[in-house]
Length: 106
Image (cartoon, rainbow, N blue to C red):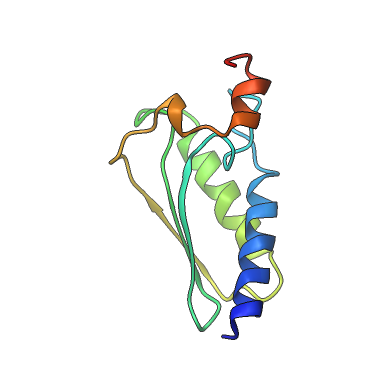
């Protein structure tokens, strides 16, 4: 994959991730810090490494499915694998400044 194509696809994926919200927190999953890594392979398959705010999150399946379906809808993506991890555990320090402002933490 040409570097320019790779960067454009990664940018489109991040844009989609910023439209997906944790239903319990009014912040998108990207700015909330739930997305640890977005890896795009040469064959345009994508691996998303992500976490949740808590391992026992009652909406885990819903959030993971939204991320998977959202990234699959990005033009050019040829398959998505979600790797749900809890190490390192999520903390509010992982949130973007924008997310912290929105939640009144700054």
